[in-house]
Each structure stands twice: as C-alpha cells, then as structure tokens.
Image (cartoon, rainbow, N blue to C red):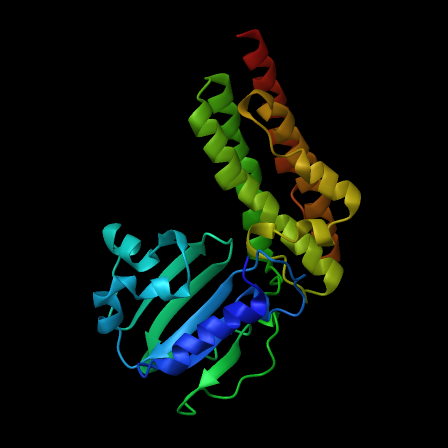
Length: 287
C-alpha cells in the first residue's frame, strides 16, 4: 500500500501540473482531529477546475492515480436513477486501488466552490493557485455534532419506534421474512440509533459526533449498553430476541434522555406495545 506521503504527493502533483485544476481541498475523516488514524481512511479530495467537460471526455485520466480495482461514479448513477444532475458544475469518482488505497475525488467549477467551500467544518485547503479559497477555521467536526432534539422530535422518535414494531411482529407471525427484516432494520432500528445518539449527546453536552450511522457508538456508549446494542442485530430466526433487546435498550436510553431534557416519556405506549409483541410471539410459536 502506498504511504500517505506518496498519496498526497500524487494528488497534489497531478493538480500542480494540470492548468485546468486551480485549487485542491480535502474533507472527510483525514481532516478530523478526533478520528483515530488508520490505513483505511479515504482521501476525500476536491479539485476546483476551470471546466468539467474535458475531464469527462477522457475517462481514462483517473488512471494517473494508480491501478484501479473498482470505480463508482455517483453522479452517473444518480442520472440513471432519474435524479437531476448537472455534470457541467461538478462530477465525482470513487476509486479503490489494487494496493488498498481509496480516493473519493470530486471536480467542481469555481462557482460551486464559492457555494459549498465554507459549509463543511471538516475542510483543509491543500493547494490554491489563484487565492480563490476563502479562509476557514481549523478543521473540526462541530458541523457533525449530535443535535439536541426538540420535544416534538423526541416524541416522534418514540412513537415511530414503538408503533412500527407492530408491523415487524405481524410480519413474523405471517412468516414474511423480507418485510419483517426491512421494517425492523430500516425503520425501527433507525429510531433506536437516533435515541442512542441523543443519549450520547446528553452525556457529552451535544459536543461530539457519533459518525455516520453510529460508527462511533462503541467509543461513547457505556460497555454494558454497547453489549446490549450488539444483541439488537440478528438473523431472521432470532429476530424476536433482537426485538426485545431493542425494546430494553430503547427504554433505557429514552428514559434517560427524557429525564435529562425535562421531557415526558410515554410509558403507556411502551407497555401496550410490549404486551402486544408478547402476544404475537406466543401466536407465532403456536401457529
């Protein structure tokens, strides 16, 4: 695997030699002082360019960065999915190389940079040929800190978690595995994750980031809660157990958040849904 120095030398060397590239900056985990460094971090790079067309006409130009294992072009995929994209303003290549390095490279014209550059708190300028990049504070993750929930947001999370469990239970009784698994993992579990974010936010004064999809939960949750969290994931045959582990963990986190923020937790909804779930689990075992 090429070293960090080699990768930055390559990224900046290409930019310095190409007159179409006027500035370079970086976002992502490599700019975050709170993230533990490792060899698997992506290089999230933006080239500010005079135009995008010539880069798109010669798709082989990205081979300058190394031997490619696989490439994804999100903007091309978005267009294929029917989304509105404008290649003349920006375009991106996510590149995984045979040596294990990965570069997420985006090109954008100056006008896009003027709109977006100061929006991401995780930003470090690397090259500026024309002094077009405005000054930004030292890179930090404050833009990604857990947000304190309003009372309505908190209530909505609780309601969605408990209500959608009835859909999971019915699907399991009917042995509708695809629906049960997606409803549980994509809807119910998402609300559990949200409540755990708030739990961590309360514990830390809402001044930390838990990362995308809670990837830093293990760092911030107490050990016993994280062990319980691990039990909320399972295969279909053990889904009932995972559901009840989720209920236990959600209760613990939601009550703590409510007490800390002077909100009221709807214990009645929980008790009624737990009773319903137990009934349907019994039905599923006897059917």
